[in-house]
Length: 409
Image (cartoon, rainbow, N blue to C red; front, side, top):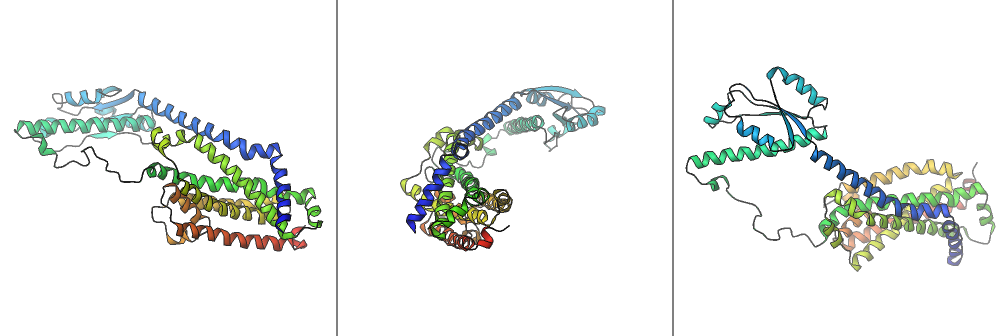
């Protein structure tokens, strides 16, 4: 039986990897597309950040009534940032608010009246700063103004303290982690691994499924259309050998395609990791030990078999490849939702996730990337994938043994 399965496997692999179009879609496209895509995203993001930072914002300020003698420090603080300052009158305030809403101006600062009385009496007063959170330039200007105002507030408080012959240290009761020491006790490489673990398992399951769809739908449903499946069935080969051979070919193609995609991600990692605030040094310092690579392989192979089995059973039931695409898409969306769900889990995921096929494999992959996977969780994930795969292969075999289902009209 195994020899027949390997004959079918060789036939399918020869068909897959001698087709230039399929080979390009499986290997070359993700290998080239992903680094280019992430580099473009990173460069566009950096260009946009640079543009926002260098933009000269228009900040309007209403000085209030009776504040002529005390506005100097405030004007000086606001002018210290990259801004064009406009002094406005009370009658212009409503029009400027509308201009901010329409993204024509960035900021409006409204000072309270008789500010000198509050300053002299050391009483608290509130300054109104109007901005548009949906406008990048306005949001950035608000952030910068908040910083300079906080700094000015600290300067005024220090002056009051010194006027009373008190030490500035009275303002600081204690500091937190100011002594130069290593306070983060996370394992070496696990911090960058945390970022990788959020993204990579999701990408892996998506690439496995997409690549299985590319090959698996053509393996059975496509052969039905071309009339070549009947030729295979009349040979002296058991239906089980055919199913196993085709399933293994889909699995290998999916793994090759996913590996190509992961390599593309690794090449582009310096770009997309930078988008998450990781430095190049942190990225280059991350590595997986031989044990973790072994654990990764132990989890990914049963997962690939499961994905291939899911695609193959749909391909077997479908009349043609087009119908198979329509039938597999709901399954694809469910798998995508599972992948996204694992991105949002914390350090202790719900118990139902740990016992759910596909989800538990993705959770274990996350643990492997942060170098904290246990063999019990790996075993559970692998066994659930194997059991569900066996059920799907059995159902596929039943379909192959039923001419009514296999060649339904």
